[in-house]
Image: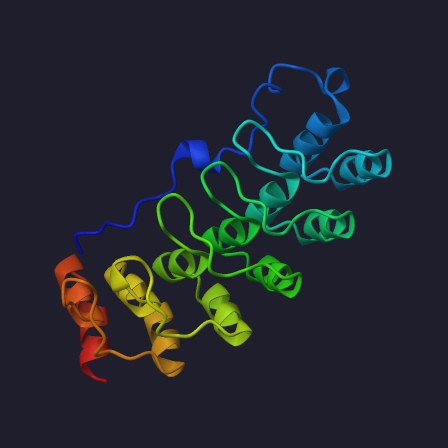
Length: 217
């Protein structure tokens, strides 16, 4: 598969509130302390700061909110607290990463389900033109894929370059996710912008087991 699925850059995944790293929490503003509490998974401190008026949608220098940080960590309790305080479920980082994309990337199905229930949109893409479903499929997070399908995402929806979730999973050798998508009715005859089916994508990437699985359909 010539479109090798890259891992997100270290800049994108960094959860540090830049500019606050060298300071002690007591030296920071309430908003900066909130971001530090999210990064440290310190729910009591985060709750206290929200109660004192910290802005739930404050962002660090990467544009990350506390909700995005909590979603990436899979911290459901912190996600719940931030949503209750009015955190914007759609707010993306400077790299275009929404809380839903962050949770899907790391395979946190419970958080994905909660964000969807809170109204998170599934169509946003980051600066790499990848959506939450693309990441979930390509990284083999089958439970997340299933949650999103149940939510209503079309199993054969095309993403950048007309690649479907099945093509992404096949190209990364994610056998279990391929099985799930097939069980949910994914079509094997669709082609990307090169005219490649999921089987051809898997073949080019050297995933023989996936090729055999798709050939049996």
